[in-house]
Length: 171
Image 1 (cartoon, rainbow, N blue to C red):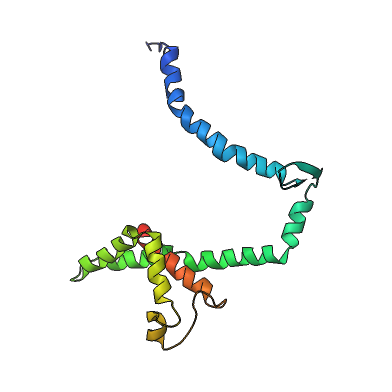
Image 2 (cartoon, rainbow, N blue to C red):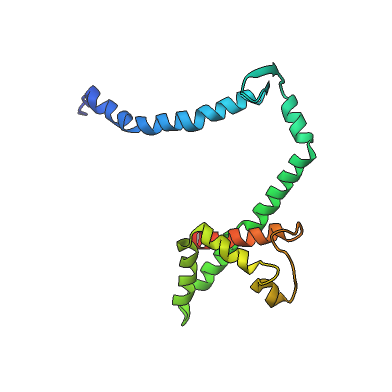
């Protein structure tokens, strides 16, 4: 015969929820409330003070989707994602590092360096490397390109930085 479970006391049933309550309140106040408020506001014409002036419906969305600068921003975002997605690079490097070789320790250290360096230090290193006058990249390639200010090269240059910074984490 099966023994019937005795119900847990109320204190035992409520305790997990009490432990979760601070995190739930935090998420409600700082994540869900602003998101819902933004979605609601997007259907209205809102002044600088955040006061609803007039119902706009989907007109705001239509205007933004027709805006050429918004379309350019979306296009740049997709290009950046394609260029800076280090998953395939990290997989390739992991396959290379899987087999122990004489230089394995140095190789593994290079991966760890990307995780140990702060973003500001990496930014300074790449800023110097990309410098049009004294940068090592221009010196090696024998060119004089302003990598970070030229609209043809800036996206690639920034994507290389992002990929290099994330390879250690994705490796």
